[in-house]
Length: 271
Image (tube, rainbow, N blue to C red; front, side, top):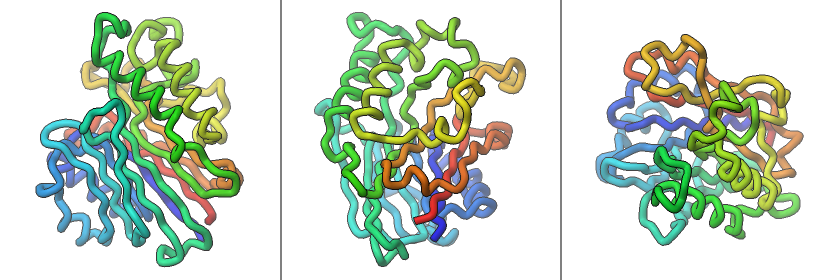
């Protein structure tokens, strides 16, 4: 059975709920994972999602900052939230699906918003960067993120690192820019390796091809120069590696009215 999952850093779900609705009406994924929802759970626009057919909703919100959510047309078996670095800052939520969702085997889905890390790539000078590196280390060592043999696991989200040379517009010019520094790339790839994850984008797109999911607000016209980075990821466990039917980045969403600086990323799996 095809199972479509999407991930999108929406940069305020209430501000951009019309854009989310547009995406859901046009693409109809089974599950949408959101990051940077920027609202507490009590004011999350539940009714709007329910009217769109997404009745199953898992929330980990925070006022004005961060926040993650999973909205689904299929029911959950369970929900879980993990804290990292001893901070209650709403950067993770996971759900499990089972037979009630029409799946032959259980599936666990993790949704992450990794800290951005500020502007100075030195943990001694920048506490935000130090937090980011520590967060990635804890992800690497987190046992529930280590895909078990034969288990169906998916990890998605704004991981805030573009780990490969062609995940940024200029590898040379961004080596000392937060999100593509060697230490960040090394740590994110360690999370991937330790968990046994498959990076769906790079499984399907050659390493020498440029791939982006984010374009800065700082550019007056983001299309000029196309200076993007691939910060948004979909990873699957080895058991799902040959189940991926399709993968897409909705680049056009960056041109929608009052857009997020990130665009939706989707994958279709046969499970």
